[in-house]
Length: 433
Image (cartoon, rainbow, N blue to C red; front, side, top):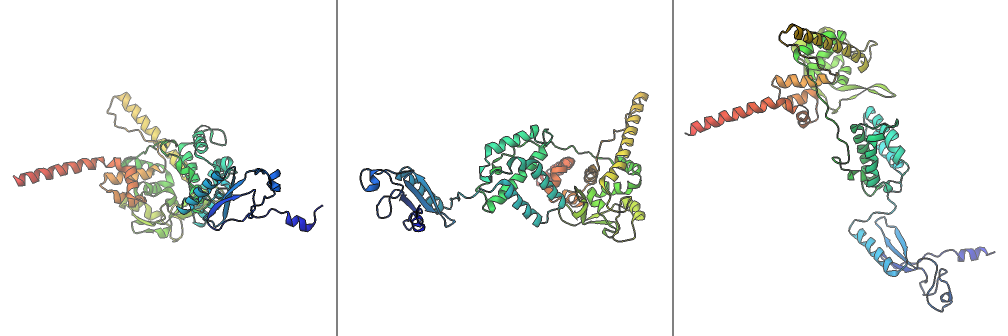
């Protein structure tokens, strides 16, 4: 049994390196040229050709992290080539530490999620992030080191989500798949910025070719007469329906409206009430986090004034219990009224067909409360409102968003502009002649 002194003496000795940024070392020789313990055969005793255990040559270099990195090779040429290549990457700022990306996706995602909590994201947004992580992303990628997630596997996984991506084994919707990809991209982007990954592999996914297209949602609009009929049929929510249809508020914005937010024929939209799973109805800032003022048409104001509460902090459209109005409570009255109006329109249409009279009754469209915002935009545009006015009324972040949604309703304006330009051109030609 060796003594403690001998044990210390027999410990592997660190191989001295030539000062500098990199180089090559012979693992079978000491600095004085004598064989190391890895040398074997007669050469270990100073005779014969070099022999030893394991790869003989070690390449080394100093990275941007100021640490020495090494790798063993069979030949000196291979070791030198590797060392030179890595030093060149360091010199040209292309070097990536081999230690980057060893954390699992679960660990990195948890750090990313904390940054979103600190950024004061809306509770519903955070719940959405958590749901996608727990049900879709982490079961597949959670325990895999982030540097081992590659494009082929990620692309194949995304393609499979449309077939059997849900926990029940059914395909996911295009929007849900795009949300999962977007979340993974956000986590990878955070990892790159934090020095936890060398690249954002989710960015390699082609959104046009690798992700399913989200089907365009059909918009429904009511005429003035249909909107008034609906307001008359929803009972105690008649005034609220007029406000949604003529002022363009989102349902959550109307549900959060307080007496102090209503001035003389004007609504100040500050907050929105949204249902959050596990927390109930939560009041937050508007979707764009901006306050806006919306005028109230005189006939709507006449309906609203008698119903306004006296207490400044009281809700304008409360639930039966006095708190925030749940969407479900409004939907019950809304859907019942809609069904009655659709049945009535269909009966009139059939009667007109039997009596061979003019077919003047239009089918009442199948709408949702959100379609009242589309109705407001349609009626405003038909009344001559321009894009910026509609943008402000609806609270869109940009005029481009408004144009994307309602640009097709402005086609008549384009014809009018063309006619006006033509008339101006003719007048100019006459003046010149």
